[in-house]
Image (cartoon, rainbow, N blue to C red):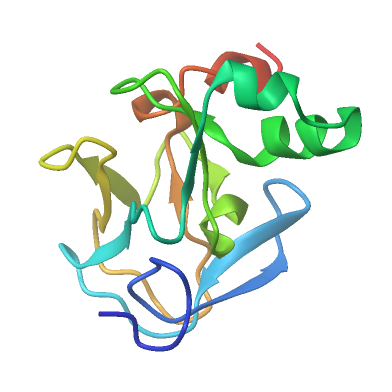
Amino acid sequence: MCVFFCGMLLVKTKIGQSAIHGSGLFADQFIQKGTPVWKFHSDFDQELSTDDLARMSESAREQTLQYAYISPATGKYVLCFDDARFLNHSDEPNLWQDFSDPEGIDTAARDIFLGEELTCNYFDYDQDAKRKLGL
């Protein structure tokens, strides 16, 4: 259950300036290790095929490619409805993907403090990680 209306973010967060990359997602509460932070929900998040992207305007497609990830489970583009799209990559993330669910559940890998940027490892769940990271 969300603490406030937030798509499927399961904790209080806010968007702010990131030292990693432009904007980032920050904890707006203390998050204890092991707490689920985000979970895919088909009523909020979109799964898009390459055909869906081809029907979009160039501008919409570019935005989708910037914020969506390519699911290793389905091969589809997943676009988060909520602010989870502002999660930035880290080689030492404070979130990890629990794959007991096909799209994974982002879970706190350690205690996360109020105001701390939430990070994940793109390579854990995004088949487009290399392009997004310029590798």
